[in-house]
Picture 1 (tube, rainbow, N blue to C red):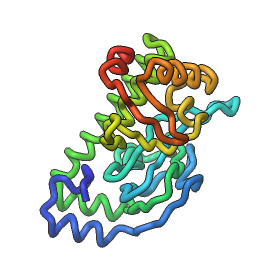
Picture 2: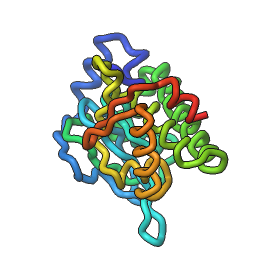
Picture 3: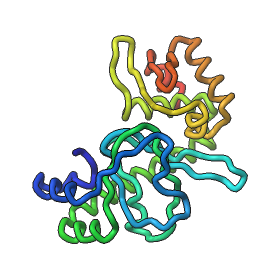
Picture 4: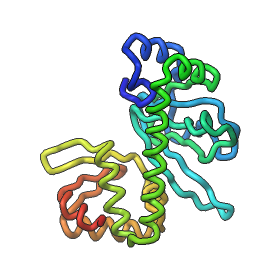
Length: 219
């Protein structure tokens, strides 16, 4: 299995660690943990998709990330024990692996190289957060939509005859939360991209026809 947690381990050690983890089947809409709850375990996605979101006092939700197979979440509590900083909700049916805090600490002590990969994952998460904050300040909504589509395509895209098909499994509202804009504004941007022949919407998926123009629009 490809995940930062196992990247520096030899196959025997990673197999042993996976065997010690608890496999759990998950379904869309299921909440794995809520923002503010104490965190005591790490999760690795085997299949499906998970969204990490935060809710404001007035009820609005902002999506911090959409994660897929091989990615992990919940690791922040291992380095900074405290309440969860986001709510983790299943976006697409799948399976995850759970590992408790004490078990992982024991593995980190036995395999110190793993810590570097975990810190690398945290650094990438922080870099993504910083970029998202900068986009909210400096980019307009169509630019943010184009960037979100490109980011989703690099992780969930599948090459087809027409271009790249991205099965993001997000509702229109969730996609708007990921971009940090209203659903109406995001739909207007997507409709404009479709009218220009850059994309085609297919329910909870989208086909990218012109990646070059989307990249230019995302700058």
